Length: 240
Image 1 (cartoon, rainbow, N blue to C red):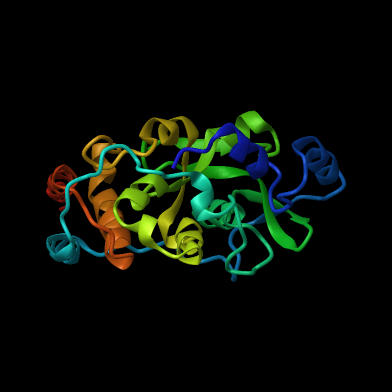
Image 2: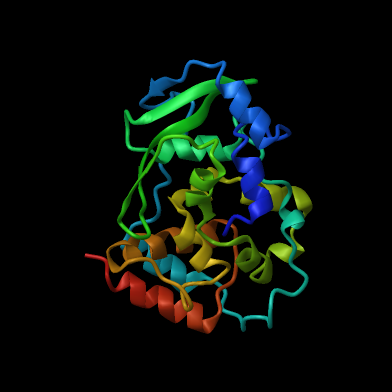
């Protein structure tokens, strides 16, 4: 899911979602950032099904025609971005930034109840294969350049079944750490709300991407449309 400018303003504030970006920068000048290779409370990287299981799961997904447009989708239907649904004191953005960073490269600070508000670090973008290095994630330009992607975009989830969910299930989906990846911002914007029939990452990541996508759709019992199913099958063909 691409981050809109308004969301980026919130993201740059770190764990203090109600803090303005200017106030957040000023507050962090009072902190001594510390390097943190990992956190015992941070979740393990999401593990998608292997290729054999993914093919079997794809065959079991409900196939339905794709609705025209997004049929009443709006971001607020999935709650605010970002929340602290695992109650570790940090919002999901900081959890994912810490989890997906190259170990030993992150600088974090305490902000409110969050003990790993991520200020800087290095990431390997799975979609492009590039290495991303940021020195000040309270700088909006840098914050926009690394975004947290919903592997299955919220609008895609909406049209493939989430419009019928209870609001609390949609909030859980939007903040599910196994559905979220730290990725290159411009690449995430180019992906938008597209499904695999319209957008694919670099070839070297297509196997993993298809497996992740299928895993999410299986876990949440979301449908696929025929062109999406064909694209996922083709990407699974890149698995070795």
